Length: 137
Image (cartoon, rainbow, N blue to C red; front, side):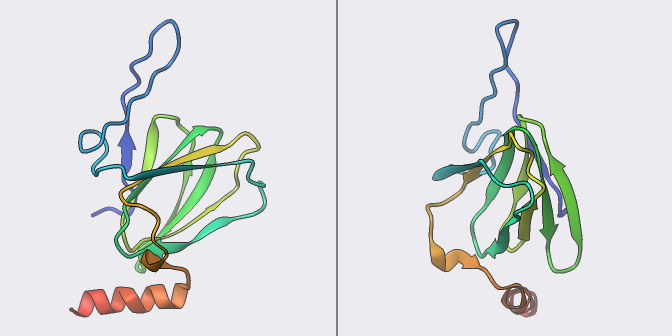
């Protein structure tokens, strides 16, 4: 599996404007249990700095842009999210950090489950330990 996977949603707009549609288990590879969005983020204040044990997410910049660092413990890649219909898939056990938010950035995230603090890994060293446990089982 590639570290970077994009989910492209169809733009069904016409001369009246754009219309982007997300459908659970069709063009979104999971049932959507939660969505949240970040706006008004300070360009020089990074966010994220965690991984999830089980949660799947897709991050879309529906306005503006930001950069996302993706880290699976073996490789780290940084990508620019900046197309309103092209989202970055964030699988379980991938450390991610968001930064360089444009002033107009609105980051919309679709999530496969409800908020559960016990699913978060907020310490990078613990993340690496969890990955090692998963690989040796």
